[in-house]
Length: 479
Ligand SMILES: [Zn+2]
Image (cartoon, rainbow, N blue to C red; front, side, top):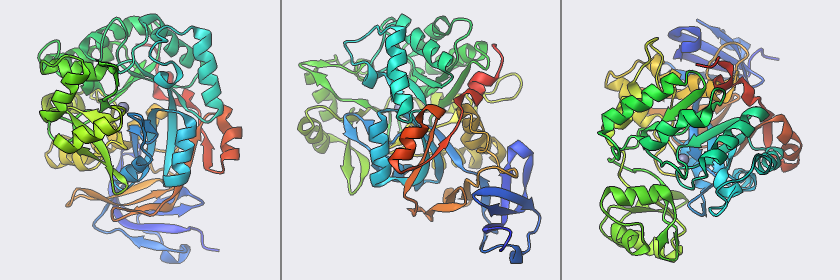
């Protein structure tokens, strides 16, 4: 019996957790990293892959995707769309577990998937002020189905400030992941909501702040002033707030929100903000006008993937779906996205912990494409990039065996071609899920809490019990 199942030979291995940036052979056995050496004899392995000229990094972890429902439609295509870019682990930001499990069975791409219960799914728009007991019951039920925690979708479907604070408190007490798209009935999905955050968290609250750039679009102050203030709020919360941000801007696919109308009224608060930014009012007629004018795009499915349509096709898709469809506006200025991606704290650590995409079924899976562009532009080192795209996100989720390639780590690996700026191979626990941009994985591994183990076993999917309390959100002392 050979000692290793697989050797990844001769790649430049970049593993900032171990201060390593050098050519190394990586030996994999039973889905784990078994050896990192200058040279491993091929006779010791069943198989070897020559990766000279390539860069080997711990598998990319995207802490903000939508592979479950989005905009009223199933987005299982998101598994493939994320996996083909080199991502190995994702956090789905708000679905129902049945949608996640169904999607993984039908269209999974071999990813590790943790998923959060959406507050909007648990508490429809007319339920603005659920009690702690109601929140706890909804959360517990979903944890038992395999959820990793709770996503408060306040920006789109706001709760009262009190109920938002209760969501954080209930999730913290339960020791599960809790992410917050900023915004309550007293604030909004912009800098006003960022200013409200410390009062919601009180002295103890801990939270994952979703896509910080989305609150710095220049609605309240010039964009870079908003970024500086958001960074300051995060810094003052210390380790109690972990955060990610995306590189989606006014160029390419912009934001993602809902085109839903109730009667004549546009219901989603982010959509309402986007309309207001260009002088439209939040009515069905004005949203139709914004689509016709080309300001608002509509997500449509074409050949098994989601693309952004404009003009007549967009209007048709929105009308045909009875407005229940995802839409997009070019609203995040590039200067905000870049400032937040690059900003550092006084100690040199990134002010925003992670690069994420808000991708998956939304066609902007840019962990590698836009992330590596920053490396190529000299805006960050490759080790910085690995921190932002793998190490920090793994720590945000409390996944100790991911984000690095030390002995005993999960053999989740992304292989990069730096010259072309793409991922050419990715492995999950030693098995290839993507080769040269083509997905070869299927199904996937549910990452869940102890409470979900029984349901996961019944689902037939692979699963792994993890402990969200190991997240850096919980591990660091109050700031
Ligand atoms: Zn999102």
